Image (tube, rainbow, N blue to C red; front, side, top):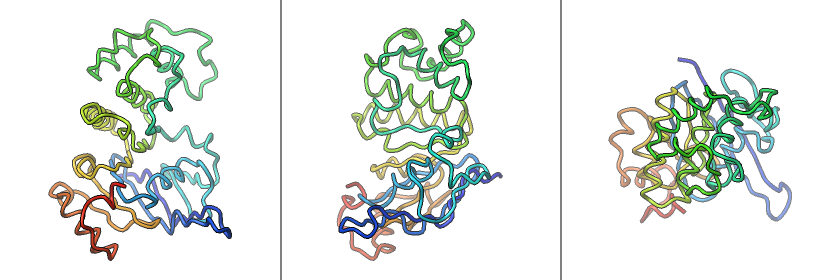
Length: 267
């Protein structure tokens, strides 16, 4: 199976040489095969979102290499890496243009990287495709193509953002705590939709979460980060049998700290 992501010993320190110096990534190594769906957990400042930002090129790493689909993207700008990636953020407002309609948002995502933009309008064929895609969400949005995205709930917006992020079948889908701002019922629905989209399109994905249960239930592999590096990598049958207690014990063992509750992983 093809290697879709390779992170080779990346390091990143913010504000070096100052009183606010913070070692965010301290030699992260990670390899994802095509079709891997990896959940990422760890305490505050462990390096979870920083790793996703490094992959996306939000800022350059200090050292190390990043390959997506075999291409060395280490020195590429965030803009140039965008063609490889789909991204969904914590804030439901981030991934969509709120003053535009659902169909306009989807058309922008579908035409990303093309020169024609929205100037040609949306064809009936495109509209039918969007309607079909929205119907799979089971949220009734297929009948609201002309509704402004700003009028939708947070859960509906995140569901649409997921569709938009995967519409061009990116090499890698990055989900950065994309259910954290949602109520539990809506979060569960958005996670169900995430699972379906990743499986249906055979996408390779990374999902940062603060919810240990979600990290265990979703994906085929789980990594735990602490102090800027990966301390645990569990996959396959071992992951399926995991419990929250197992994770807490493993964290205590590897991090060398006694963990009384899951707060250290969820903070």
